[in-house]
Length: 137
Image 1 (cartoon, helix red, strand yellow):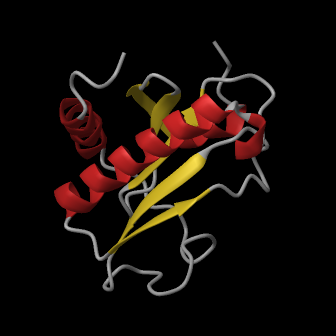
Image 2: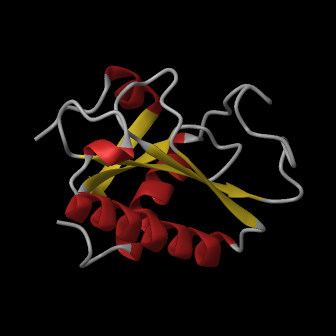
């Protein structure tokens, strides 16, 4: 099992694991923000995954985006694999609203991270686990 990069461990909570990816929640209450991290060592780019793993990543990413769009009634789901700060391959899934603090600009650097209230963070993690019950291993 690949170790999740230290920066992601610091900034996120691990919610669970799909067949390929760990599902993380970013600890920033400004946006519903989830991250998929493939459980593979020494992978920084999607093309470094096998063709089957690439298909699995797309499937898990699409499923996550679909659930987030529905559950949060999103105006847009931003999906990005940047890796400029964290070299480990990780795919951001951010729920966006026309009314959010950064709209229509990218979220990075727009405003400081807003910590979750502890009980809201716990509820968000528990709810996300329920959304994918039976899909996580």
